[in-house]
Amino acid sequence: MTSSRSLTLHIWSYLAIFLTIILAFLWILQVLFFDTYYENRTIGLIDKLAIKTKVYYLKNKESTYFDLISYENNACIQIIQENETIYSSNGTRRGCLYNIEDNTELTNSYIYDFINSNKSKKNYKIINPALKNNTLVSAIKLDENTYGFINVSLEPTDPAISILREELIFITIGVFISSFILAYFISKRISTPILKINNHARQMAKGDLDIPFEVNENIKEIKELSVTLNHTREELSKINETRKDLIANVSHDLKTPLTMIKAYAETARDLNKNNETKREENLNIIIEETERLNRLVNDMLELSKNETEMNTLNKEVFDITEEIKTILHRFDYLTEQEGYHFIFKHKTRVMINADKNKIDQVIYNLIINAINYTGKDKKITIKIEEYKKYVRISISDTGKGIDPEEIEKIWDKYYKNEKNHQRNKVGTGLGLSIVKSILIKHNFNYGVESKKGKGTKFYFDVNM
Image (tube, rainbow, N blue to C red):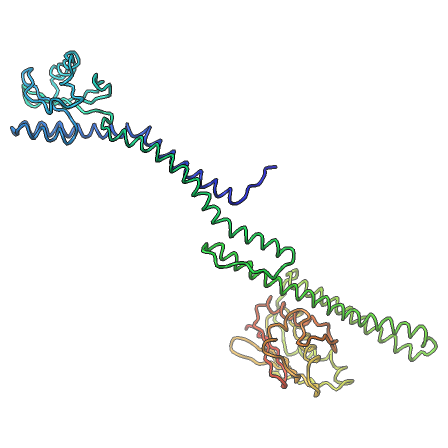
């Protein structure tokens, strides 16, 4: 198993390696390719000098012209006519072949070879005995009896070049050391905010959601990461708060029916075992409370399935008017026994395309919510309104309304706009969360309109 390294060390290593490669590349160019480049450049230069020499000779230019091109290009020019030197540039110049003592054999070798070759131009590559370096000689025929010989060193002989090469060694060492130091500080600058984020993330993982992530970094990606983690922290805080509320409220909704079931079961067993009527009432209450528990469990399972998208939509075209009528029949017992009034305003026939079972569940849960919060008149209004692009279905109550700052929170699981949790008349307290998840899955617009003291209207729009 390989050991992991810190981010700082990784960044420092990559920068150091990069700088080392750059310096190595520069030295490769200097050591391996400079001499080749210099030689190729010199060959091109000496060919031009040979042509210039011939042009100046044919135009009978003064010797100063030859001196000038010789001086400017660090070259040696020798003109021989009928085996005698009639011109040599800067005769004392260091490295000129014609100025070398005891060089008769060397000089004669390429001079005689070219004169006897009957060629108009030819290049020779020889070793200069004085400087022990490669030297290029360009021989050119100026007229029938006159020949020009230009020689240039194929290796840099200028002392400045040697000095530059020595300087390059010291510069390389300095750059190498400073680059490693600079790479270290750059790596620290980049890694420090990431390490801070990592430490805060560890604290967040342990449950500490109070420490915010800093977002004032200059690095765009780190700033975006901080913003994202801050958002995550806020969402986790909400989830943590919701979890606490959920545990408290579910515990309450479980405890109440369980307590009643136990109490009425003991009453039926101990006090009313000989009173059939009372025992029957006790058993009916036990059954009702058991059904309430069953609804609570089913709603929690349904909400979990909707949120994790375990179930899919099975869309079909159906008459929403008839569906609402069917749903309202389920609440006939509230109309007959407790005086609730259900007012249904609708057209004769309205067809929509949606998942029938899930839309039934939405309407059913919104009606239950209205029952739990309507006013003393116990009036609930269901309305269908048709528009060009959608059909709006709304359920209104006449209760005390919802504060504006509470509107967005009512869709949360078990959220109550009162701190003290009160037991629902019907339902389990998860209805609005189920409604939200179903409508989001359908991509339907939904919302709430509420006025304090006048009631609340929940609505959703079915796309046409």
